[in-house]
Image (tube, rainbow over all chains, first blue to last red; front, side, top):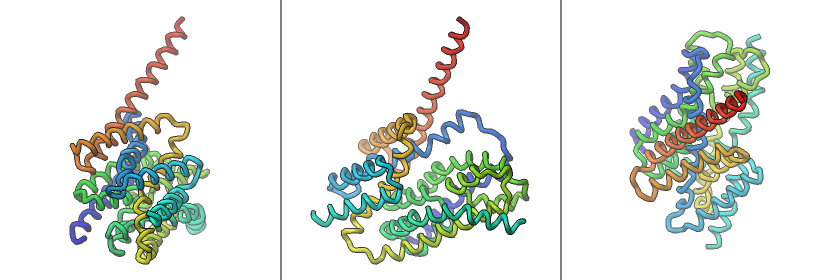
Length: 102
Length: 241
């Protein structure tokens, strides 16, 4: 990957560390406006939605069915109460079988 | 006293370390399939230490997204930690700034929830170090182990594993969606906006995710704030009658 990777890593490290460090070290319990904290609270769910869809459908180029099966199986396992790891392993398992027979 | 607190912290952090094991292992595996060397993968876990951001970075690296956008995405995903560390600072024992700056590196969603839900009135620095250290160790070590395992996988399994990243996101999101209409709306709206960018190719992937996330988060918050206001004014109105 080369030098650009290490610059990116340095930037990512800062982008992760600063939001963790600043409030704990300097803000000593000051409160954010409710609308700001509300928006910040929303971000994890919104980012997951944007990450999953539609990209999951096109994981394997030219094979839409692969993505559809992946989405359906992962959603089903998660909906039935499976842990994150069982969702990951279960979906990989089903798609491995699918990949073996196509 | 200090030592006792440190060991109590290690013990409390053990459940996080166990929880990180499969996630870090999968990250190491995926980093391998995304083309990162074992040193590059381990270094990301050592220096960045943020599960979601690292997984996102992998998918963006695989999509050849510009590194600067990956850094910006990392920031957008992690600004939620502003909230957590702000609320946590009230619960921590007063301490020198540089010491707080050191252990704040170890605050993740998981260590935060362990510390924030602790029954202790005030949390000592030694306890926080214990929790942070065992969780961090697990994350870094099992990233490396995962990368080593990934080298020996058959091809059909590597093909199937290309879904792992997205399956993990589904696994993180779906439990929060259950019985929570706001989460469903957030994920649904962001996904819809993302679809628009994807098919129109108006923005590159990194920017599209950033814009979709912010627009959805702000829009849904506006809807809910207005909704609450209206509910409140109705209530006040009825009171008046």
